[in-house]
Length: 454
Image 1 (tube, rainbow, N blue to C red):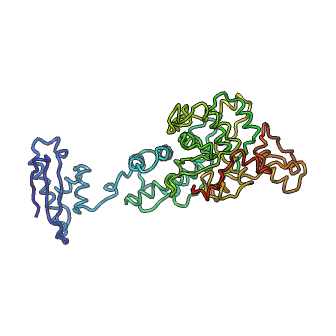
Image 2: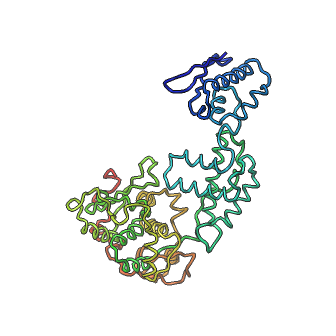
């Protein structure tokens, strides 16, 4: 029925037989690891052969597993059991498809997701920690019900904040994201055959815009911060975030001097967040007049192409996304006497997108900032008091002919009748009513981006 042979080269044994009814040849390899504690590996391999032949007979003729083989099956290693399942001599059980308790299963899932970025793996681990903390490491996956899942979500929203001691609750979008990841974990368990249904299905997981944490960052606030900054690189980071809408730190730290074309007035931006898209995460953005002085200052200091290679990073101080730009910026705002706003860099990017959407076509703005129009409307664009005043024909707002970028504020947080803030240190070259000055400042190349093949 089955044959046993020793392979001296590989230091192990090979059991071969023909499975019925397909008559397909099956091979079970017994490596040296199975016989580490055995004084007589030949004898042990022969005993395994006897049990395998018994299982083959059951497969062909039916019947129940004998008592000796049944006891043997309870003592064999997980590795050998997996080989017997693969040879179709045993019916697979949930344990054969992977860990059935929470902590080992989550560890296996995170380890096998080598296709995602390290930051995504970190998010997986944080979510896994929340699950293990609530359910315990030894909780079986198939024992978690939909009611348990709902209790976990309530606990996560009210007590799941482990990073900020002053408040226990998590933001609603954070709860939704982690719920989505947990649904992903348990969907994988279904594919592995460990469970039959996902207890976390039906829980809200889609992220929505959080207007409570939206805040328009005014030019006055940015001017105060820029004037207080003593580091030219930090000034340029702030300018890139507020005046070009770059993501900080991921897009900023990837900038090289090859990407900064001051003559053409163009930035080439490499976005790790969207590099899986068809365009590879590469986009082009104008060097706006407000941004140019800060990049020019760094360019004059570095003298790229002469004193340093064009492939050098623009920011030598922050060469890695692990550098904590947020801490440096918070210290700067404190020194400048400016109260920090929520989502420090995101709201600067959103403020710039709000300004640009009021002056340029939405398609162009979204191409420059690297997001889609639905995402821009949902997570970036903000209603402003300035727009409200211009809509009702307020002469104090409209008679000045200023752009939306010169006096902006969030309408939901300010009195609509409040006089707009005057921009400190505004440059006449940024006046949208004077296109000649815009052209001189190099906002766009001589040809349009679309026609120049960008």
